[in-house]
Each structure stands twice: as C-alpha cells, then as structure tokens.
View 1 (cartoon, one colour):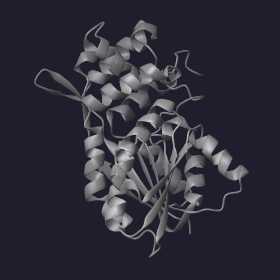
View 2 (tube, helix red, strand yellow):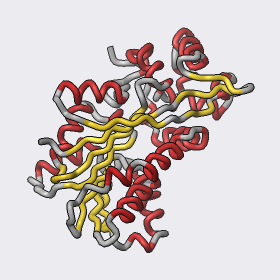
View 3 (cartoon, helix red, strand yellow):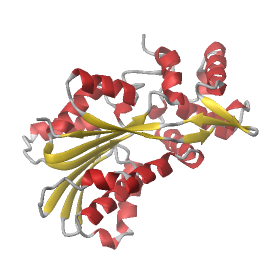
View 4 (cartoon, helix red, strand yellow):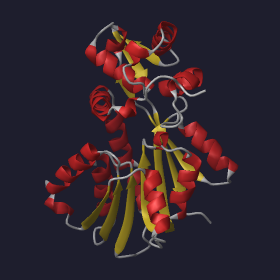
Length: 294
C-alpha cells in the first residue's frame, strides 16, 4: 500500500533546507572525500587506456562539490586528458549552484560541461531516442538511486554505456546503517514507491549477484548528530526528521503511533549511539564499483 504521507521531494525548498542541515550535521561529505582521495585514484588509474579524451557522466550531481573532487583526482591521474562531463541533475537550484561553482574555477578549462536538467530516467529516455553511441569512461551515481522507479534497470542501463576499462561507481547508505534499520521496520509506512525507494547497498549487491555482475565494495563510516529530533517543536529537529524519514512535515503529519515508533527506533542502539548528551545516528555509506559488462 502506498504511504498516505507526503514525500519530502514534493517541496523542493524544504528538501534543500533539510539536506543542507543534514550535510552540516553529518560527516557524509567528509567520508566521501576521504574515499575520493585515498581509494578512488587507484580505481581511476586503469580507465581510458591511453586515450586523450575521457567521457564522464555524473548522475544526480547535486551542487557539484563531490563531482569536482572526483574530477580533480581524475585530472591528477590523467593530466594530459580533456574531459567531456555530462551533468544529470533535476533540481534547478542545485544545477545553478554547480554552475556557479564551476565559474569560480578557471582551472577546469580542460572540462566541457553539458548540463542536463533532468532525472536519470529522462536522461536514459533522451539517450535512447537520440540513438547515442557515445561510451563513458567513468560514471558516478551518488546517493541518487532512491529516486528512480527501478534501481536495477537504471544500473543496467548506465553500465551498458561504459567503454572498455570504464568504471561505474555507486554510493548509497549501507544496509548496516541507521537508515537500513529504519527502512527494514518502517519501509511500508515511509516509502512512497512512486517517488522514492528505500534502497541500500545490500539491495544493490543482491541485484548484482543475481545478474552475475562482479563488483568491488567499500564501507564509508559516517555519522550524524540528530539530538534535536527529540525536542518537540525544534525547527532543526523537525527538518532532520523530515530528511531521515523522507516525509514532508513528518512530526505534524505522521500518526502519533508512527511518530513514537520512529523516534524510539532512532534512539535505539541499532540506529544511533550516545556521545555525552548527544544522539549520534549511524549514517554509514557503501560504495560499489562496477566494470563494463563482459
């Protein structure tokens, strides 16, 4: 049964506010940057195979901060190479923020940016309609597979675009994170599957295993301070609750039973730890690295 609750993505302004607060309160971007600077260079070393031009696709690129970190590592690995970078992002605000960021960095003149204000599904449809034959050397999908109807089909499509030695990188919440715990218990109440999926790296691994697709897997330890969620009426706490549940105005629209159950689970050791008087949510991420299909 579809959830009667309204998905947070219906209100882009509130979504962006809650997302910004999540970034401030969590170590999400830091743990991604650690991965990008310590592990990604080895992954990127083999792509391209001596080519002078590389094609990159960023799916759900947001405001571009993490994209540019990855492009910087790519440039260090392949300093002589020019890059064609397809940016796929449905939010006008995020796309604008990304363009502003690029305009402040003249050193990116080796990259040609193509801006696609569209969802991953629209990009796929567009690509097929145009009968595009271009292949990609590096595709990344960071924290976006929640917003496609069929994550497995989306992965298969983008994997099919990889060139020889190409790499597809997926980052999602880990099945062993607080999100994984929350979704296992409340998936039916919280997930409006028309809009978003409660999907973790565990789900994606099961899909890849069923298709016989090999992959490398990494865990990125991450955490997030959610203490204000337990103070009734706290504005930041309510924004964080919206983000955690993906529900617009969760504390005002959820039934008293659902709200009490979610808050109790968020405090539980399966989701969070205590640090002095703070409640620290387990926001661990997983990275999957997939090669071109054989």
